[in-house]
Image 1 (cartoon, rainbow, N blue to C red):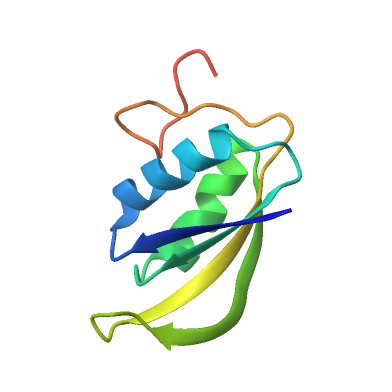
Image 2: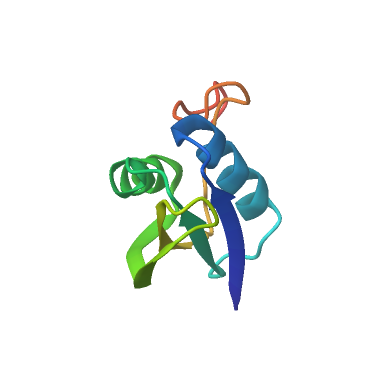
Length: 98
């Protein structure tokens, strides 16, 4: 199953909060296609996936302009079976009990 999530122009932390919230409700093995104009996403997403136990699958499809004209790329992330929670206020840190 593929779930599409529009990250718009959200920056790093807010983009990860959005992805974390969406992935939490999905079954392991579900693939999330996250579309964003965040230029740091190709760095942040693989690192976040490695940390949390999700699997970064990389960019999919062509880069397309968003409503504001900024280039938007879609990245694929597979929801992990044993994903680790992140800190509610800092999604780039594991939760204390993770």
